[in-house]
Amino acid sequence: MIKDNEITSLTIANFFLTKSELTPKKIQKLVYYAYSWFIALNNQNENQIDNVLFEEIPEAWIHGPVFPTLYKEFKSYNWNKVPKNEKEMIFENDDLMSFLNDIWTKFGIYSANELEYMTHQETPWLNARKNTVSHGKSNQKILLKDIFNYYNAL
Image 1 (cartoon, rainbow, N blue to C red):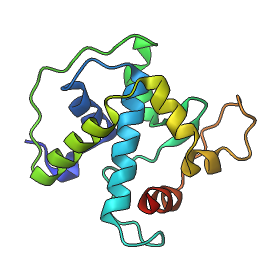
Image 2: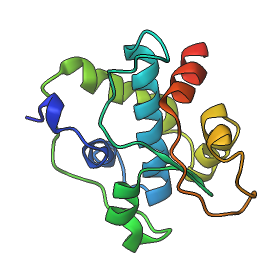
Image 3: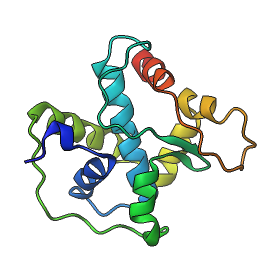
Image 4: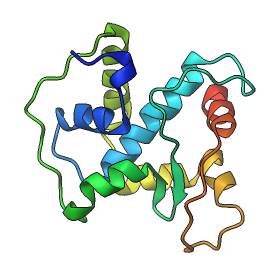
């Protein structure tokens, strides 16, 4: 059983990998949407974001939001799919399992490129990249207040 205080970006990635084999880019975007929607749904305002899915903050890379830990974990796959995880994952919090299944249902239907395109239209990534040339490298952190405000407004 996975306790709430043990959850990392890799834990969430492995959950999505129980659903299907996925490219590293699609894993990144699914984890980002889980992270972002969790912030929007579990905090009251942009000035006091105490509830996050895990501690790592996404960065605004060329292909969209990226969690560096996930990049390091899956970079050897390049554009190939990471195999499906056959190990059952059980979270201490049943609501979290339901939430992650909802994220999968909503966003798992899109390709990695479609998810990348979606994040490129959204304020949190755009704001973090505003001082970066369009195809320039960046490891600028995406602000939690931008995530909260954007997804909470939806």
